[in-house]
Image 1 (tube, helix red, strand yellow):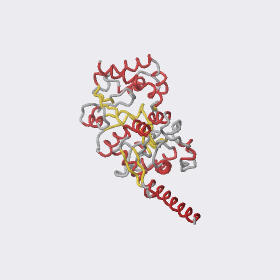
Image 2 (spheres, rainbow, N blue to C red):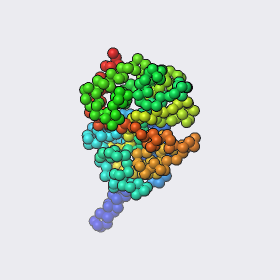
Image 3 (cartoon, helix red, strand yellow):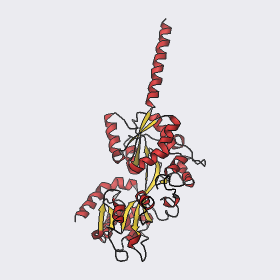
Image 4 (cartoon, rainbow, N blue to C red):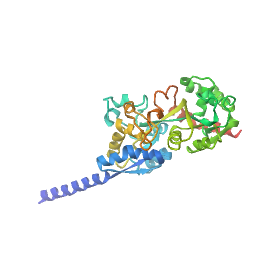
Length: 364
């Protein structure tokens, strides 16, 4: 009788455990940026993942406060996010603070479709412990073709040349990218930008170069602003996210041209919070969404380059217009001749001080 009772109890407890596991795997919460970007992830990753596993993907558009949200959930001991889309610099911080899951890249991720191990397939230096990049995006310059009928700007130096290429500029109201571009326009080689910027003299030099165009700048704070400023003719050249300019060019038929010279490219991708409530399902989603085909598929929806080398040959056409996406990728060799990789570690260490100086400079 006792053995039967024990057996019955074990069966009941086992059933409860199975039910709990099944319940936990019914859905996962994926945190991202919203808008067209979340839509691109849903089309390329989430809907196919649900079709394969039966697990529902719930979107939360809170990546703008991803690091703060992860910290708050870790402190409260109550995790509600399963996987989080985050910028590389914030991912490094989350890993250092122990609130992001460490990744065993060659075991936790799929090999490339060509058999390449993950550690050799992703953007060099991007697999930093807890972070898995998915896309390469760029902040760069674009101009309105109608503004320059007698010859168009092609370089960062041209952007700073108000005499040869007159008109107002629009720049994002932050120091990042602007300081790097100022140094390039002042003659610093692309691969020496951070070496120079990491000195007091280099910072002074960058601000001095920005002084030369300061009176001709309209500052923007939201990604939708620069395409609108270009379209309205309020500025002739603007810095912008490459995806925003692609949308204006291809979907809205705006007469814009991108200046790929000196594109400031950044990585964006996934971390799994240490206290993710559905960690196994989250890791399954991580593995699925970062395979070769899925990263290539995302480029059908938005003009950001996949972070895997093996994905590049699989990039095809825009899902709604049929436009070939390859010429619009930041990572296309024709566009990637003089890129500047944003140094996430540099900005993590120096961002607060440079932002304070930048704001003081703006107020002068």
